Image 1 (spheres, rainbow, N blue to C red):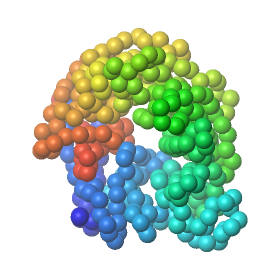
Image 2 (spheres, rainbow, N blue to C red; image 1 turned 180 degrees about the vertical axis):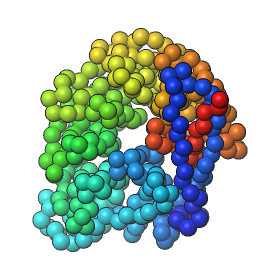
Image 3 (spheres, helix red, strand yellow; image 1 turned 180 degrees about the horizontal axis):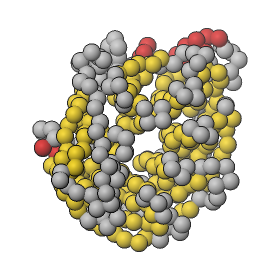
Amino acid sequence: MTRLRTAWMPALILTLLAAPAEARRVRVEVIKKISLKQSDGPPSFTCTRRLRLLDRGRLLLLGKGLRKEQATFHLMKVTDRSVIRVAAPIRAFFAAHAGRFPDAGPWRNYRVEDLLYYDTTAGQAGVLLRERRRGSDQRRLYLRWDLNKKKILGARVLGRRTAAFPYVYVRPIGYAPKLKELYLQVTHGPPRGEQVRKLSVLALRDGKAREVMSRQVRRTVSRGPFYDAERNRALLVEYAERGAADPPPRGYLVPLSKGGGATLSMKIPLTTYGVSFSRDGKTVRAYSSQTGKLWVLRAKDGKRLRRVKVGKRGHALGRPFGGALLLVRNKGLLFLREGRLRKMQFVKSARLYPGFSHVEGSLVTPRLTAIKNRRTLHVLAFRRVD
């Protein structure tokens, strides 16, 4: 297997040119290609399921190490084009707190799941662990990591399995640097054959937890969550495919700041794979990969304002530059004029890379657009064509 090494990686150069409201055609160029194939190392590597920006948009999370190196994370700097590895001092924390953390047990009973956030400006980060012993509570643990002191300051149980909810899933929503708060989606799943799930959102700050919302839902919440950093809110989406029984899937627009208001429940399309918030915050665009339609929903009450056919089998939706909306489909890139949602142009995947294309986990932001085609990463640059 190919190892992930800093030396052979080409330079990361991202050029994003701002475009007017009526954006012109753009030229798309692949400026970096990275292999994300698993490597048993050292350094070992396995890629992340979904690309995410960390450290206030300065780092791209590529993946983590395996086995003895599972506390090591591989990240790419957006600015200076270098690839770095950071190691969380988890083993040292368990060794120093053996028997003192609430029934944690030895380090070998846990597996590192994710780097939840990483903020070098504030000097703090968070790591998710999963208990893996058979017959155990299979808890999910949050470790608070002080980057300046280079130590884990504490741990908190985020969820545990019970007879009523034997499965627990934790997904990062986002991080608000001004508030220094981390937001997580926690789902407690039911036994096989039952439907009712418990869906919660937690806010973590300085080791303290605040429950933002909690409710019971009847569908899995396996896509997203989708974070609106400008307004510190998130859309959590239920997942349902064509032919599923009523009721239709719902989306939950959750204000994350303390005192931010009530959660809004709204009807969303089947298989909502991509979500983008408008620049003024008044609408939410939700994309169905199965039907190929893009819904425009009013943020204040969830009313559907428009429904536009844009094509099936897409996996990411976002604003790559001013005046444009980009849908990343397996077949290629569809650029839309953001206001009217009219087609600007379509770029086939074959023009960017040869062969098979399945772009689940891709990322579209004004700072970085990266296409994740299974185990290969393509970083794109856009230039306006006069």
